[in-house]
Image (tube, rainbow, N blue to C red; front, side, top):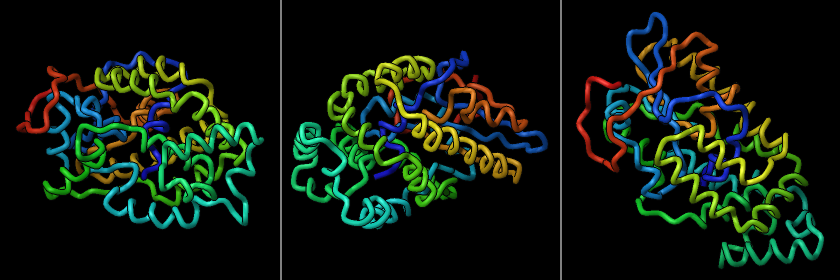
Length: 303
């Protein structure tokens, strides 16, 4: 499991519109650095619609020396497994049931039993946010063998490219812990009462396949409001940290392909605006084709 699951990838897409071009791929050029780098907005999904990345994404990835995700998933998955036994659990003897009135707990418990099956008992002492994330992940259908960001990282590794993360599991866990447990409980209850926002999630994947970031914002707004603490810790503060680290990597030279959840790209405090504020030129790369494709030869020119 990764923190930036589909819920986290799309739900935080609130904020002022920026008139961004309809693409998830952005070319980054840095003064004094000859090689171009790229920023690509990913989604943590196995759905075919996640793989509609057109004729520019894979060639751009293959040209770069480094692929940098939020996390290096080849090592992060093992760390997440350990976190299930430690930081994902509530402290002391506190149980999930203790956070709810009886009538509310009945609905939450029913959703956990249905969504988690025989794994339901393991969630009873987990922090509500992670229960919500597990329910979301278990509800996602998949056409592909891997979620998109894992596929792209493994492709880079197979190419002999360096794969790295610009955040750590510990940092992502700390971002969740910054959300008060009562707010996490309210978010889980809202998630349950709206049946995981499955219709909205499906609509978001349709929009994601069209690479329309602005429309993603419009669709995400239909999933309701989010706590200020959620936006601050899981989006605003992480964006600032990622921009700082991306800026350093870019100025060190070389070509980097950044694989970051699409929710982090738009907004005035997003990665596109943040990198531009640091003096980098960030330009949209528009594919001539948005057809589903896994095999392609590198190309030299893009529009």
